[in-house]
Image (cartoon, rainbow, N blue to C red; front, side, top):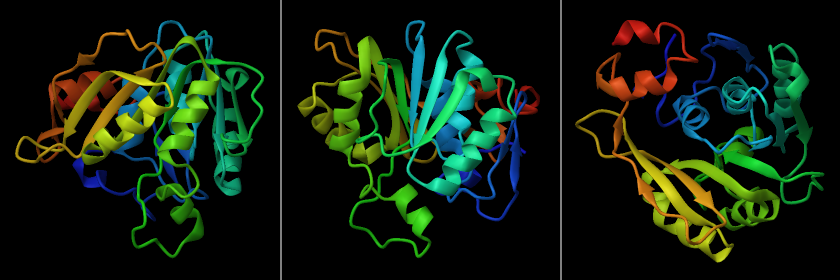
Length: 254
């Protein structure tokens, strides 16, 4: 299975208890939010200069943390998750992976947990619904709505926890970009890289990937927009290049 536009705006529920990547497997039956395109984009796009330690905030299934453990073989990857069943599932996914000695997860809120180190890279696929009609499922509500982690709280935690040359990377709805950049700026974080993501050539951008630094003098690099699907199940070269190290059969879509 390959994730594309069909899973764009919401996670898949009830489709499968697991998701098979090339190098690891995600069990997800206890997680409110399943593996989806947003997480794959973030895990494949986020970067930093040789980070010794990486933090995944709100790890859910642990998929982004696992992707980063694969990409950065010298980094220790820590994760925090406020939902207890999800944190337990992430721990199981970490333990079953080839990088179990470099991965750990804590059931905690990032705003409160006393981390012992600073991080060269912090990533977050944050909750972004605000004052909207909330889902009945409590775990899904926590995962999708920003009552448990506001933009200001995320940016403040990142400023506190980033190493001197560290980076924060997030994925958001495209129309949330300006508000998040302003909030991050008030917390001492400055946007240095961004990439708009279109589901198809005919659709406006639905997501934006953003990278922040604590250095206000860092130059801003605006990457060209990326398209996920050219036609149904015909993936763009940019998406293939980004995801082919992780997703099965992506090379067949060239």
